[in-house]
Image (cartoon, rainbow, N blue to C red; front, top):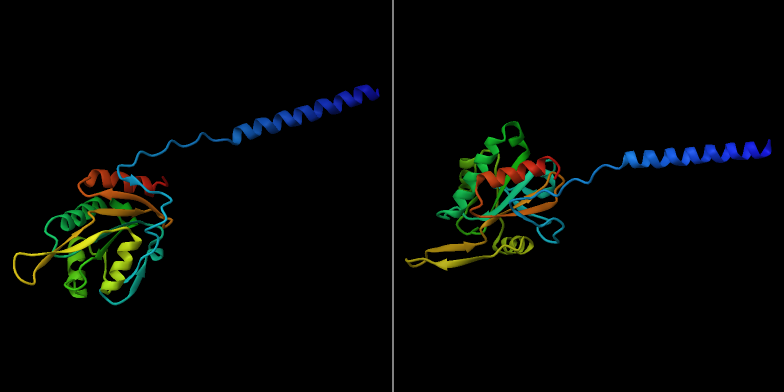
Length: 206
């Protein structure tokens, strides 16, 4: 009788253990395939982590206030003849193409030419592409610090007439996911379709 009881207990424990293993196996979900982004994946980068400059109304803006959205940060200047307007126009196009999800996309334009880019000029410039876009401007020293944080290069290039100049600068955008983490660097010339694909992926939790 004792032997039967012991056998019964062992059988019961074995059944419980088997059930636990089965449940553990059921809990495991297949790992999600890694998303093939069009932009350069810089997830985990130790730069481009903070940004604190004033908007045209004099309010200091930070990346934290845009959590919940995919944020696209671009450094440029209003007198840029091609790269800057093309980049901003493509972002505006992508935002519109996303429909309701477009409200979850935030464009930020950081001036690398604070001497000429006045608050009034910057505000008019970005809102011409999309009313929700934000322009940021700092002192020359603050601009250098922001560019250093984002590993952005910019340099004045003398123009054809005395006192005139252009600005060479990094031609690309940084994408932040809705959690506020920098995720991608999109090179200039990638196109609106590639940008839209990456933004959709980030909005979907990639």
